[in-house]
Image (cartoon, rainbow, N blue to C red):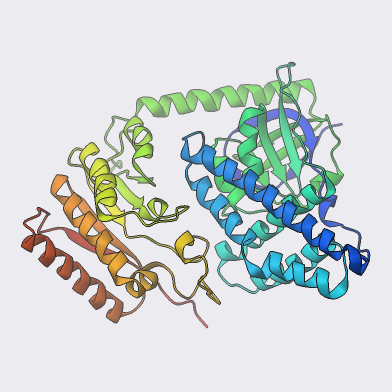
Length: 442
């Protein structure tokens, strides 16, 4: 008999498919004592698991850089790689194994619970949800330690896809759906800013999250309808309901087709106010999509993705070519480029050893840039040079004090003076703006 569940819609669309249950029992690990003479082998098991998971994540990252999936996923993978290298996780688990003579799985889960509790104390909802990344990294490690790599079902041949039902899913899991005829997914936990939700939207997979105990009320192979637009999940629908949702899915596709025909029509309100529709990008590889929707310009070019996941910093020439390519391709349309926003969940590999007690509130965005003036100056020079090729505007992220504004303007003037002396062209009237960070109320 059909019944309906309600959750949080995080990725629009309608999916119809059979349930594939993903177990969450991985973290319910046994605790057992390891004899002192066997402790070196237990530590070796842990190190081998870390190496295996690192290899898996590096493989996923390679897929993002080859253009097989959304580039923002690369940043999520970088974050999980960074967590694997964090002494507060793996090194602390090693110390626990040695001090208590316990098994590696139990040591990892104990340390994970301590870290998750710390994340729960963070007020910022986006950063608080990063506790899920800690859990997902430990799940991958425990899976390897148990010798259960897991698998997704083969592509179905009955016209239906597969709907994954899980407690939670990592971005890495979500990426793998692309090659397995996955129609959509639902999870017990999660929210609209979770990494999994962001990846689902980038892959256009309908998804509903926050359903709490859905894994306990559905069975493997059961038919499911996921309405990612309204946050509805229908379990065991009859043929009439299936046909109704097939019709709705067709209507959505027709609606998208109609909207596509409007892409060259000016965006104007009924009372005659023009609206500029701008695109957010992470690099020149996103430009085909920008042109496909005929955007009025680039509202935000997030330059930190030029810096992430590499052993050396991009020099001025490399940055200049990247920015110039985007500005020229927009043919006079405005391009707002944000100076790199690193820190919090995006850290540079070359500063991996730097300890930051609270990266969300400490050395990030403009504060990081001002702490590394030569790196910042190099980027400002590249941006100014690129401004000679179109309408470029510079945005500086997370300004919170007048002193920071003064320091940024001084560095910009220094960059301009250097370029004038070297007789390199730039837009003398370039517009500079900033994102203002407003302190939370006490």
